[in-house]
Image 1 (cartoon, rainbow, N blue to C red):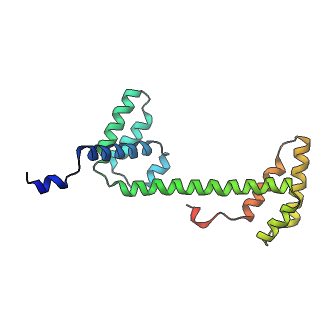
Image 2 (tube, rainbow, N blue to C red; image 1 turned 45 degrees about the horizontal axis):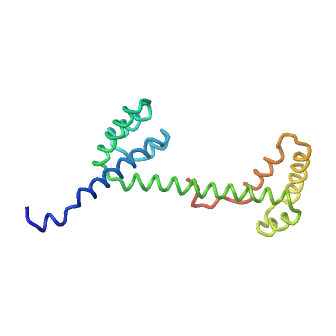
Length: 170
C-alpha cells in the first residue's frame, strides 16, 4: 500500500470511537417511544432490531442486541437520526423552561400583590378580574389545605396568557 493512502486512513482508535458512537446512537433509539421511532426514517431491519431490543429483558441478550444494532447503524447515515434526537431534546428543554417560568409567575402572584401589576404590564391582554379571583381562591385553598383546584386553574390561565415560544411547538 502506498504511504499516501496509509496516512489518510483513520486510525484504529478513531474507527473504534466512530463505531462506539454509532452504538450509543442505537442505544438512544431504544429509549424512544414507538411513536417517536415511527417519525424517524430508519431501514426496516434497524427498526425491527430496535423494537426487538425494547422487548428483551436479559442483560446478555440486551448487550448482544445492542452490538447488532451498532452493526446495522454502520450502514445508515447517522446525521438525520442525530438531528431528530437533538431537536426532540431541544424542544423538551425549552418547553420545560417555559413551564418552569409559568410556575414562577404563579408562585409570585400568590406571594406578592405587586406581581399582578407586573404581569399586566408584561401581558396587556390579561383578564385581571379573572386572575384576581383565581389568586384569591388559590390563597384560600392553600390556607385551608384543601385540594388545589384554583391553584391549577391559575396555572392554566397563565398558560393561556403567556404563549409558548413558536420554535418549541412540534
